[in-house]
Image (cartoon, rainbow, N blue to C red; front, side, top):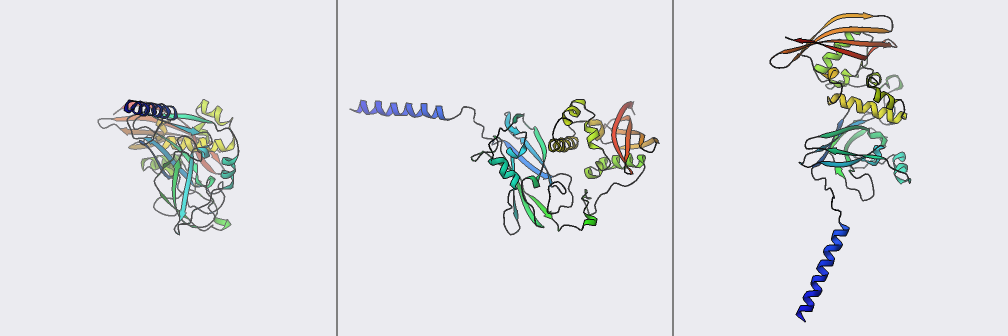
Length: 326
């Protein structure tokens, strides 16, 4: 009798193990070593209202803090990969936008790609907070991001970011409604001025030396800089307006992280404007720049190409020649 009971218990145990093996995926990721962080991108004066006229761009970074390869899915439409959560100082939660709700409740194919990150590697992109949340009132908001490594579903795994404090001010009058980057230390709005091409180059280099990104991009034709790469140019001209905006923001983010176009974001210890030639619409500025490599200086000659639009000169291309060391 005891032998029969033992045999029955053994069979149940074997059946339970087999069932567990069938219902539990072998390669389930826990994402315990993945982290997601957010920060404001191109910080400006923020106001209630339309996502296009006054966006709130947030720079999102996913990082692998573990020793094993981290793999996750990233949707082409980021609304199936991330979500924002925001509360007022009175603990009232902001509502999601109607386009976001419609997008997620409509049957459709979600296109994505798989991203792989090794130890210490990270992947960044930029999203407009107002594409996710309705910000209709001036207030102080506390914001966090949810990242869905297996895409958005009702029972999705999600990673939570750090929190940001967003100050939304009352809408300005129509006369002062132009929203531009602001200086980090003050609320003064940065506006491009009608200065000469050499002054544009000078201010851009100094902004890079001080890591003032808002000022660095102030006189740069980012679209033309992106299209210097022929593959990026072909893709940029074949996608929708929304995707073009994403590409521009991703390009700027890559520049800030020094992942691409290393020469244009390299930080010279000193520089000298050598020659400036320009007509009414086109200009060229030649500058010598010195880069400190601890035991020696690397000397390079930069030729910046500029174009004038509505009285404002912008850098749209450049070339670099190595001049040796000193």
